[in-house]
Image: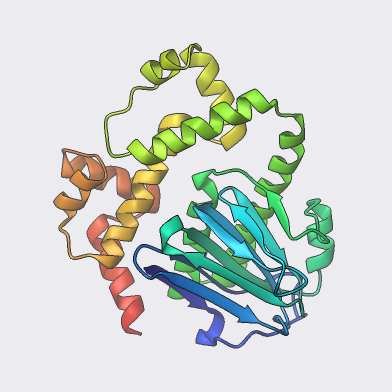
Length: 289
């Protein structure tokens, strides 16, 4: 299992704070590979809000009572309000990858309403864009490193998630079932083959559509062009390998699909503002604290 998390003031205790409109208290990610089951049970809930994003696989939630079970698949988010009973499980067989954030503040309810996020609903579809994963990873990194003005940046990053949710909820209602199906088919294909050479023109031809039309529609529904989507997956997996393995940068470059490690390093630095080696050293230093 891969896990990475960060907590404000290094405290695992949930808290309520109305000194500012929005405050990120903690965030993290889990990706189950081998651990058979990862359960969470909070009968009295938490005193803050929690937002979870199912990036891949599925999760099993029990809303309202421990007996009821709701299967939540990739591309959905789950919102818990304060004091709500929380019971859910992830299973390795599903290869579940989930991101989460806890937040509080004096204006949370109004902000959720502003972005038309359904406060009274627990589950809503937000799409499978790696943009969410990138934002969550940035939040984790900011909360771990505690650089200047990091709390303000955390608020801005969570605000970005709210904006993306709002866009998806609005545009999703206008989307045709055909294009949603095609986009989901493409994201699955790219996720399964990201480390292989992928030609967008050939993929579009295999789906009997023009490359220009496919690229335009894919960007409309995911927020980025297909090649940027593939790059995001490669960089996210490279981050994971840098954090959890002893592979060299050259080996990681090959694993995620680059024959030239120097080219990979340039792309990595362009995306994250630091080289793979610098990223590994920084994450190791954070874990040692």
